[in-house]
Image (cartoon, rainbow, N blue to C red):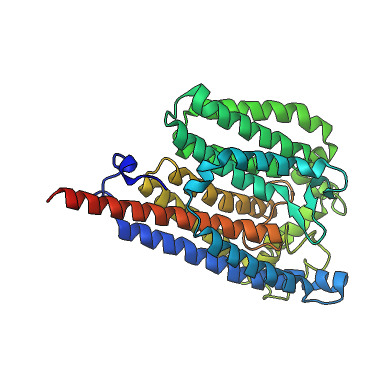
Length: 394
C-alpha cells in the first residue's frame, strides 16, 4: 500500500470533490450491471437458433452464458478487493505471463484455430481467447511504467519500454492472423499514452513502427486483401465475399424499433457467429435503430464517465489505468459496431460484456472491478490526506 505522505503533492483535498468521484464510481458500476443484464437477453435471442442446431437445445448456449455471468460477477467481487498497487509490484511477472499466454496458441495441441485466427488456447473444458488477457496486461504495464519512471518525457526510461512491449504484443497477435485485434490493442495503448501525456512525437513513432510492420506483413495475408475488396464493393460478389457486409446492412432496414426481440432472421444462419462477433447486427435488427443507438450510448457514457474520473483523480498510476481499461471496453466494442455499420471491413471482434464467451465476460468484469477499485482507493487517499491536513492545522 502506498504511503499517503508520498502522495501529498499530487492533489489537494480542497480541489477534489470526493462526492463527485463517488457518484462517478457508482455510475460506472451501474452501467456495468446494465451491460451484464442485457447480455443475458441478447445472448439468448441471438443464440437460440445456433444452439438448437449444435446441441439440440435452444437454451444450451444461454445456460453456459449464465454460468459465465456468475463467474464474472464472482471475479468482480474478488478483484474489487485487491489493492491495485499489487499489479505494479509484480508487473514484470505479469508481463512475462502475458507474453507466454500470447505465444501459447503457436504450440501444437495447445493452440486452437477458428477461421483464419489462431488466438485461442484449448484447455479442454474451455477455449480462452489470449487477446482478452493480453489487453489487460498491456494497460497494467503502461500504467505501471508511467508511474514508476515519473519522467514521462524520457525516451529511454519511460517511452522505450512501453514501445517495445506494445510492438511485441502487436506482432504476436498479428502472427496469430488477427490484425483487427492487434490494431485495437494498439489503439488502446495509444489512448493510454496520450492521456498519460507521453509526447506526441513518441506516439507518432510507435504508429510509424506499426505501419511499417503492417506494410511488410499484410501482403502475406491474402484473406485481408479479399476482405478489403468485398468491403469496398460487396455487390461485386454478393453471394460469397460480400454476403456478410450485405447482411449487416440489412440489419438496419427494420425501422426505429426493429422486428422485436427474438423475431430476427439474420441469426438463423445468415450471419456468422450471431451471438459473438455479429451480435450488434442481431441487436439492430430486433430492437431497431433506437436500440442500436442505446447500446452505443451505453459504451460512450461508460468511457466518458471513466475519462472524467481519471482526469479528476490526477493519479500517475490509477488515472491512466482507469482510462485505459475504459478505452479497452468501449473501443473494443465500437470495433464490432463499426463493422456492422459498414465503417470497417468485416472482422471478428466481440462486444465487451454483451457477447457470449467466458473469457469476454470474465475479463470485462475484472476490468470493471479494477476501475471501481482504483477510484475507491483514490477516494480513500484523499479522505486520509484531508484528515492529516486538519490534524496538522491544530
